[in-house]
Structures are given as structure tokens and as C-alpha cells.
Image (cartoon, rainbow, N blue to C red; front, side):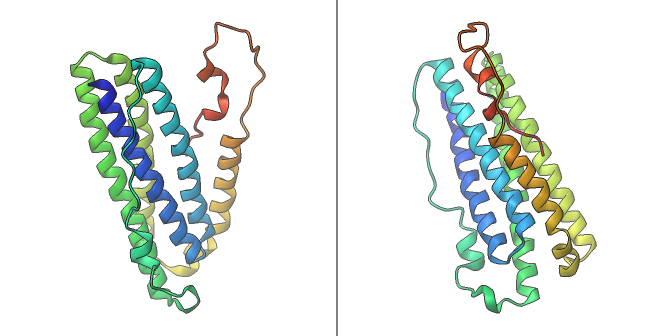
Length: 211
């Protein structure tokens, strides 16, 4: 039962990867590189989280359960599929930004609700190890949801003013370029034959950087 519950989360993360990929496509399309890099970072970080979860399922329960994979998040094609980026008006760009951030917020809201229900089922079944594993993931989703929600509030306060939005892109590029490099560049020296350190602790590249 627990393995099936965790596989539901793994499949949800796989769909989240498609979401972040399509949101990145949208922001690159309207050339807001900072917001695009934020989505690229989420894609990479959550890919690592999904792989950690799959390893956990296999090592804990000794079985393999395939994920359910989606083809599309139904965002990019809807927002930019029939547009020419060279002919976008400021109003059209604003609309794309609003809908992208709203889609991100709604996804994280739904995800945390799913994960909390699954976490409760794990706790009720006295699978405390998996409960603790998912609790950490819930904390990450909550931080991401708070960050995106606060950003939407900020954008609403400035009425999605394009000059202000464009002016902050360099800061976002610098931040998320650093965080992406931080994830992909992590490595630590360790003794290969130190049996007291498990492989996950030694493969530090799989440690997710915080937002």
C-alpha cells in the first residue's frame, strides 16, 4: 500500500516536471529570462527529488512500480501555441505572465493537498519512515507555494507593470543560474570504502538547493 501511495507522488512530480518545462517555454517565448530560469531551476531540482523518491521506493519496499506519465500540462500550447512572439503586444505578454504564475500557484496548491492526504495515510498505517520522507517534500512544496503566492501579490501590487518586470530579470537570472550551478556542481570527497556512509549521503549532487 505504502509503495503505491509514494508512486502516486512520484507520478505527480513527473507531471510537475512537464508543468515547469512548459512554463519555462512560455517565459522564454516572451523573453523574460529571469522567470524562465526560475522554472528551469524548479525543473532540475524536482527531477532530482523525483529520482530520490524512486530510489527510496525501490530500496524500502524492494519492488518497482512504473510511473504514470502525462504528455502535456496543457499550458504552453494554450498560451503561446498560435502566437508569433515578434508580434506580441504588452497586454498579451502581461496576460501570459499572469496565467503562468496562476498555473504554478494552482499546481502547488493541489499538490500539497494530495501529499498531505497521502502523508496522513502513511501515518495511519504506521509507516513512519515514509511519513517522514514525504513530510520533507511537503515542506519544500509549501515553501515554493509561498514564494509563488507572494510573487503574485507583488505583481498585482504593481499591476503587472512591464518596465518593472523587465528590470528585475537580471537579478532573477543571476540568482537561479547560481542555484542551478550549485545543484549540478555539488561534490564532496569521501572514502569509497566507508561502509558507515550510505550512497545517498555520499552522492551530494542529489541534494536539493533551497529557493
